Length: 371
Image (cartoon, rainbow, N blue to C red; front, side, top):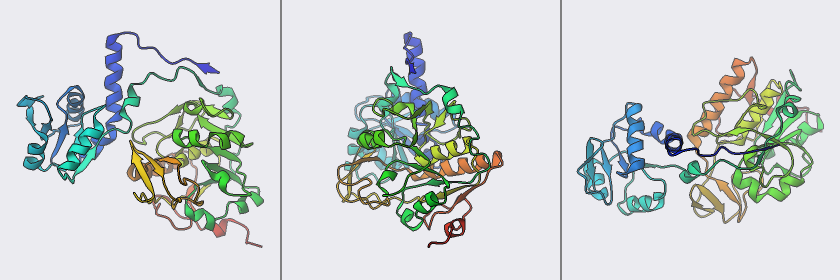
């Protein structure tokens, strides 16, 4: 089914939507500066003014504005300094970049000053001002609802793609006819076929579209990738700048925040699976400049991939979104609370790894002994 995007009706409506977009885009940054006694906003312009108002709404007060060009002495009732003068005078713990288009230039200016504090900006902020998708596919709700409680009371395994997956071979689960949810480049694991497959990342699905489209499995995707993914079930998806919502009705909405595992846990809950065990969720990433280069929050590998079960997972030339561990871990806390609220069980059966916010179970105790 094709769904048209919403049009911008008048200047007042555009201004309202723009304000909402900027607030959403900077919401994580605002959370992060709450811990700083001294922080500044770099950019004494329209975006900086919006940021200042959002800070005030949260009870936060920047120490000063920093600006390259402004001749103002004050802005929004607080002082304005040149960037070098402000950094040297206040030594702020954090700086919010009040910009949509000049992020790279501002970051370079701060680097030239050897600023060592935190710099918070918006990943690909301009996307918040693009018109909504004009033509995307959303699967009718009644086609999704056939999966509701389909596996009520049965256990399931949600499979991550970390190096430890080789220690908890999911092919053993396949042999036992277990329900499995897997994602992304799991097709690189020879001989394994999951019960359900998911991929949410725009960059990954673009780069691997041919392989993903050829998979014969039952597949779930966010509607936002339906321009290049040609088959599967397309869910109305919502991305937030902090994981605060967990959908228990994927026929209405799927949250696609920070990790595909979060989305798989929503799908498993909707199908009634309990208990659910995570495997292969190492919850660690090595981002080495010698192995990848970064542009706008997107990493492009130039060497073998050390972060997944297969060296070609994000091998040379493949792109991936830079992981943000704090909100990523928050996803598991929100999922844990949601499962408990529904009377469902959720455990981490990964072999090792750094995810400790879920109770642990030993994978070998859950499967039949190796023959």
